[in-house]
Image (cartoon, rainbow, N blue to C red; front, top):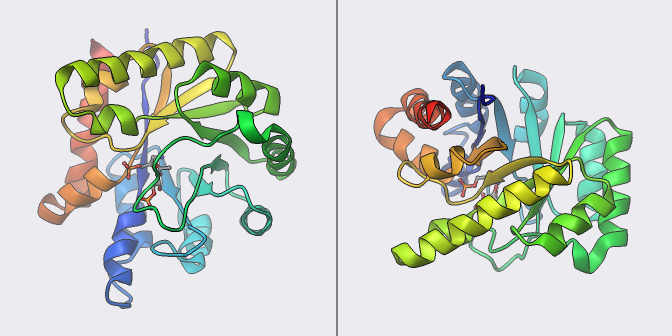
Length: 245
Ligand SMILES: CC(=O)[C@@H](O)[C@H](O)COP(=O)(O)O
Ligand SMILES: NCC(=O)COP(=O)(O)O
């Protein structure tokens, strides 16, 4: 029996709407709790260095209030590592960040900065956090993640999500699927995320060996029209349907 694929709901873009006017609403903390009620297995938040959406206050409150688990996404910097040591989340996902980017554009270059990433993994493991590395489905990046001591990787599905035509989509999908298989053989727990929505997720969720999908923007967008609980339930149903395949 294939294990159930976990759903991590990223609530960053509830905070994007709040920050657009500097109001107290909508509150990503409220969204996170409702998402958990609707079946989210965890909540992902990404306090970027420029704090364009998630604020430290959101992180601290969620750390106290979440009933599932917090997956704290962060850049590999001393400041963010110190913040993680203060927050002590269950999970930390190390991601690349460029101030000028609209959203995450690619995977973390672990192979190009192994010593720095390995030290970060060590620091985070010391506070009991499960560390994942957000990487492209490249074998050299997967090998570097193993050498850095990360128990988990999250494969960047942005290239698959943004592919323009069916041939490109298939190529990008096969790269993700091959990456999952390769990483599993290396003993890694394999998650995936970025750009997944209601029409491209089932195929990824059906990849043998996928542990968890982290999905945010599409769920929050749908929630504008259906409410967040229904939006989460709809995505949960897609993962469950893939699980039965
Ligand atoms: C790493 C990733 O793909 C997302 O989890 C990340 O949070 C995207 O950044 P924004 O949420 O700022 O779009
Ligand atoms: N790590 C991916 C994530 O948390 C959500 O990405 P997206 O669904 O907002 O693109």
